[in-house]
Image (tube, rainbow, N blue to C red):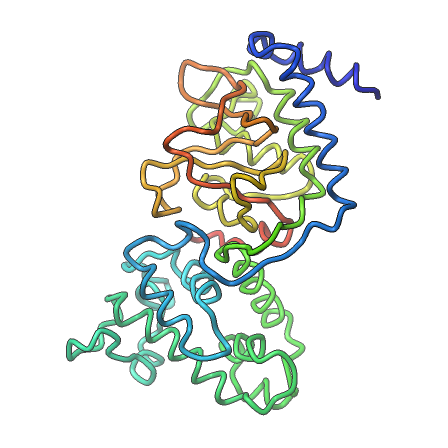
Length: 339
């Protein structure tokens, strides 16, 4: 199907495109094809500095400090563990009696909990104790398996899941599906909490997600909408982005602040069509994100904005712009379903 077909599809999608003019429609069409072009250009890179706002401001200094406690961990990895365990909720309690932001069970806390803030007690419900204790426990596990060949961080994570004895026995990550999946999940989540130092790979599915979203242009907004027949095919903001990526085989969480953790975070200057773009009234805390759209190029996104409006093109350069995520399949699969 040619470029002319794509342009006609855009114009039929919504009258708002007319107001933006032929130049913008061309920009969107070109933007979709830019994605495919970039796939062949070897864009890559990454690092372990914390991404902006990825850790709530109240805990960022703790994660940054204690994430450097030993070589087997780093701040982004520690953040990934805390998010996976509790979603940064210091009051979290599981059915298995795991407690606090780091989800220590009482027996492990009794042995490995430390007085991180030096106030004379060890309180599993206090992040100032629990976050240092999580880092300290990681480093203790790493010391148990320091002579095991392979990646020290992955051996540490495997020890966290299966016990250091199993890692020593198998001389590396043991052949347990649960343990191998745990290691993969945390390493994938780690990338979503790290600020890349260079360009990150574009998503192979981005063009398809954009195509889905542009088909929905002009559809009335519905709070809580996920596009079901009973809802008349209507969406809210995160329902639209979830459905767009579901159409290309990637399952995203339902809410915007969890969708933020579905991959690495390109800078504003590095945005590519298909990136998810996020908005918040608190630019220091990804858990406070309240809106999401799909970037299409030229400073515009497709989004489902609010009650009384329809899915449309909107500018992204507003004071509440939080940041962006380049959705990856592994990143989306790693996201916990319980936070």
